[in-house]
Image 1 (spheres, protein in one colour):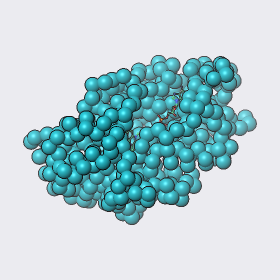
Image 2 (image 1 turned 90 degrees about the vertical axis):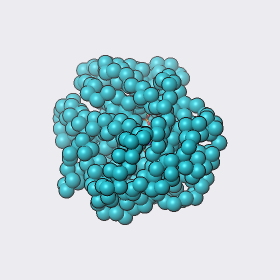
Image 3 (image 1 turned 120 degrees about the horizontal axis):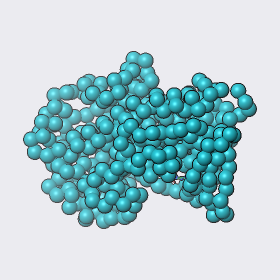
Image 4 (image 1 turned 180 degrees about the horizontal axis):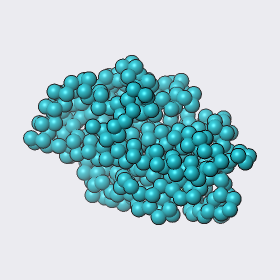
Length: 396
Ligand SMILES: Cc1cc2nc3c(=O)[nH]c(=O)nc-3n(C[C@H](O)[C@H](O)[C@H](O)COP(=O)(O)OP(=O)(O)OC[C@H]3O[C@@H](n4cnc5c(N)ncnc54)[C@H](O)[C@@H]3O)c2cc1C
């Protein structure tokens, strides 16, 4: 193999940072180019399931994650109208025992800070305020076209990884189709409310609500999903709780109280990617939301980006002299799993927001299933890579 291979990564989100850290630990020379001029407090809480926690623990980040976040004891599925529990999936110690790593929740900004500090300490170069606008394959590998405040630059690297999010411009340059608007919007807020250490999944007609205790500072993360018609890509804006309460008319007082507790919410349109699109060509590949943007109803977007980082490093380490083949192997390995996650996220959204008889049938099925069967249905997702629970990948 020639000297240390260089990797240019577009995007310092969860995926780009995890890839840079993992690849640097494997001996690659990584530079991240990030469009934003600072790593700001974007987003809100993230649930980090055991499949991703295991990888982050392997990178040595477990103690920092535990200091900044929390480990919920359970997911409680709640009838949004009556406020009564329908079923529950144990997490905490039981999750760790079953899936070999903890189920955590953490603010996205904390996860991004932990990853960026570790990446910088490992020797990753992070260039802020620089956008990858185009790239071309050249004999030396790949030439990227950057736009910065100081002007244009054209660095070269052996490999280019597009970790530039769901509206990825690199994906567009590869000729893959843009993401698809789902007709849903996400409302997010963080409130100061010490609460039970668990995730609440509130189901109701046409909308659903997720609530979880975010950290030991007594903060609670709230995500409400409703229909929405505004498909402008990438918009995000503050909205008043009163507007959201309209979508939750007739819901249990406890759910409405949570909504009222946050006077202002930040609202995003929800996009995902049609499975089957091209992920890469030559020395370039995609990862994270750029490759497989998905709806948040399986809480797996960031987790899959972290899995991508590990798979990419494994593939490159397995074929050190044929990096382009390694990228294709990585894509072949990751596509079935991430496509299953895209589809399961869509299905979950439909199931969570059922009404009438369909909702009754859903609640009855959940009650009858019992804890063990509900937990077993998550093995394909959370037990990824563990010998005892290797695939089905269809979420059944
Ligand atoms: C409401 C909601 C709840 C969610 N909850 C969860 C959850 O509980 N668990 C979970 O695992 N996932 C969750 N997700 C999904 C998760 O947030 C995303 O999947 C994840 O953040 C994607 O990471 P990424 O690194 O691929 O992209 P991003 O985080 O979007 O990062 C992309 C980065 O690239 C930069 N960039 C863009 N274009 C360029 C360019 N041309 N050049 C350079 N830089 C560029 C951007 O500025 C950004 O910093 C949720 C999402 C939503 C909307």
